[in-house]
Image (cartoon, rainbow, N blue to C red; front, side):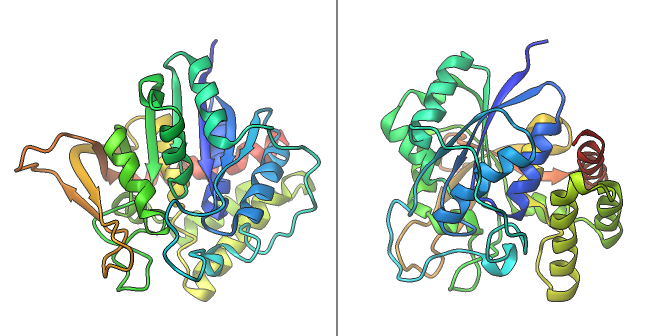
Length: 319
């Protein structure tokens, strides 16, 4: 059976790691490339992490490096999230240097080349800031016509990041200009905070995941990642029990888990604005705006929790 090709553009990241694990475990799908962008941690770490994750999960695919800064950098301090994801991006896991090497080409060219090869069947995911996708569109304007679907984790009707009252979701807030460009040029499936918070895993769900990881040294990574997530959620009050990026990937690979509604979405792009990075979701489109987004309005928490447990079991048995 021919498997459906997918690419994951990401900024690992605890939840990106789960998203990659989920995609690799999904029957009927094949990861053709994993590409790195700066986001949860600096680019030097997201680049190392994508190489290491491909090795850990045994994924035979292209791995490419992308942007190491937003399209428009209008702030002095990097917008990263080590307090959620740990100093390495992978919790408190410190990985040795990867043995594999990245692709010679940048992320935006790799994404385009794989889209051409897939002949309209490629599903493209972006689980970090949208910088690489915006650069891909600048270099290859016909990219949207070559994709089956394009799904992001980002946005929402409320926020979780920013220096101005937390009005923006993190991935959009890191690079609002890129998000604005992408929404102008592409048909986007947006899995934002409304859906991911509704699918927050309970302590029982997380403990079940840890149990299903097993005790074999071969599955040490997912078990260690889950243990970090449990500690960070319960002890420090972080949101590592909200596995944002994995839900975005699951929404496309397991139809019915997430319900989408058509709408028009814009982004506040003004540097330094009080609501910089905020996404405005307009379901009614009173002014005649075109549909540019399919917005996740509802998700099945029980189905998602079950799926994450199955991912942990898959690697306990496979690796």
